[in-house]
Amino acid sequence: MSSLRRLPFNGPEGSPAFTPDTNPNGMLARLADQIETRQLETGQAVLTLSRQMLEDEDDLEPKQARFVIMRLAECLADALTVAEMRGERLPVPESQA
Image (cartoon, rainbow, N blue to C red; front, side, top):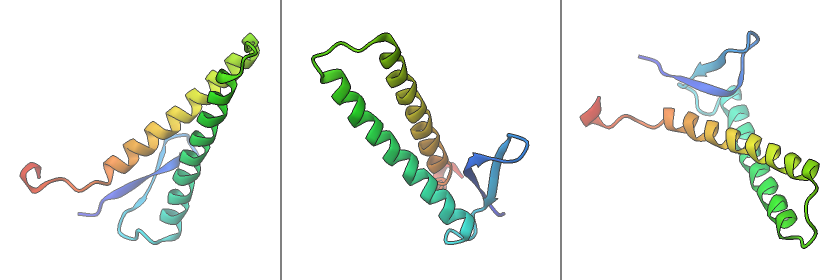
């Protein structure tokens, strides 16, 4: 039975996109790995910058605070999706198969 890998982007109709998981070094798998890595790196950068903004002695304006919160929420959603997709690829222990 062939397994599928969910990709970190949706298909043309907006539904999840998949690729066969039989070739982890294939073009789509490498692209997916690069996108996931970039999403996590972006999340780390946004977290660092938002912490710096919050540590600044000047109070954030409401628009600034909203912007920071929106970016953090976007990055958290991406990180949770990456974790979920990677969890889907973990092998099922024999005792649960």
